[in-house]
Image 1 (tube, chains in turn brown, blue, cyan, orange):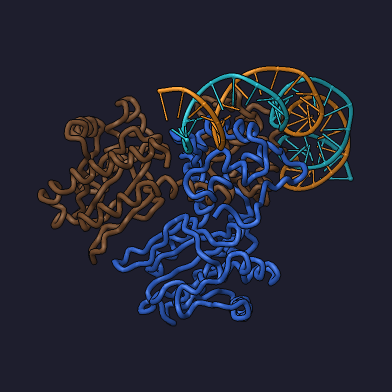
Image 2 (tube, each protein chain N blue to C red):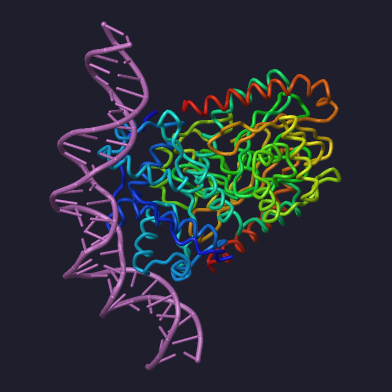
Length: 259
Length: 259
DNA sequence: ATCGAGTTTCCGTATTATGGAGAATAACTT
DNA sequence: AAGTTATTCTCCATAATACGGAAACTCGAT
């Protein structure tokens, strides 16, 4: 999928164009699943070949792009590192609060963000229980089928929700999963009303999860606690929801204030 | 830990300095756990304030850096996205082969690359077993203490191995871990001889792992299968090693051909 | 061996990033 | 609260830097 509307490279005034161009190239390679040849890139971004070549060379030297033996270009391991750190730093703000949640509730707690049209878990504090939920950090999942995802979606315009559902699709991991855009819309309404999302065995059978979006977050962010339905019942919810709400508010405050 | 030897910003000739500087700043923020203020950054990289400011502004506009309300700077979600794509693209080539390995052997399989002086896991296919190994994608670990790390080291010059061990250090996570450069050298010899690496409870007690480097890879890459010692025994090895070898060869071939 | 698409190097030009000086804003002090 | 200092941000003349046209080169195909 080369691109939809040839975003070229956004040139905001006051910006350093070499840098903007460099990231334009990265973006372009990212969209060109796998490798991209020099001329293929040149077709996408509208720049003369020597310029692109010089820029790419610089990126290769930095380890951000790697050059394949067939001279194609691909994203390099340097980006993996930076992205990983970026993710963990996002999660770092929330971690102490997750710890509190786990300590008070005894079930695993997560933070996730939206990346593109999916949720990606950026941090988790696992419960000490023998049987516990655990979600790999970095794992990506469909938004409509997770508590955190639905919590984030509830804060978006429906137009955007529709677009996300369209591009990412709406698979149903379990028989309880939401499968249609209408059902999703209705569910998001309920979430907005009550202020938190419930994942009722929608992601995995036997697992219930309560999730809440972090208000006014610079990036979309949500936290959740989850565990087996046997333990995570109504009385659990009664204890969990106020704690979640409190944690979300404090995380929000801390992100606002910088840190 | 501001930095060890103030790497400043590496200025390789023929490179675009704005871009090199921009990544220098990202690197600097990455090292400054969490946020970094403008002047804090200025102390690390040796550049005048206005220059840094302009560069950071550009990065903020690109979504690669986010500015906190207290004017501090932190890595942004754009990097999470790029890093994630970079990782999945590295892993994408290997994933189908990992799937095969998991299907045939029933234990988790991983791909990792070397980034700087550590290994970073770029993809994993987890086994279906209840008790299973799992390694977060993006996780970094010391090279001498992991199967994949040792497999990669075995393909390097000893001078380089020595340098990596010196900069990264040689901690011993378990009593079986390799703790001295001499032992490591000897172990690498054995690995070269037999063609694959064994992690014998060196990373985590109770876990054994067989790893093999991908030959002639554009970036250092290795794959592994790992699981509890009870299941991952000699008869497992007999089945696993040929499969690993085959997978490594096919991944190598596919990476050579580009795409 | 010849061709041609794609890639890389060269180098004079002027566009682009630069950083000193200073205004504006926030933080700290009395 | 008002004064003081530290830090961040804006301007703009300067020249250093990135630019891109043209040409050399590499590789795969005929």
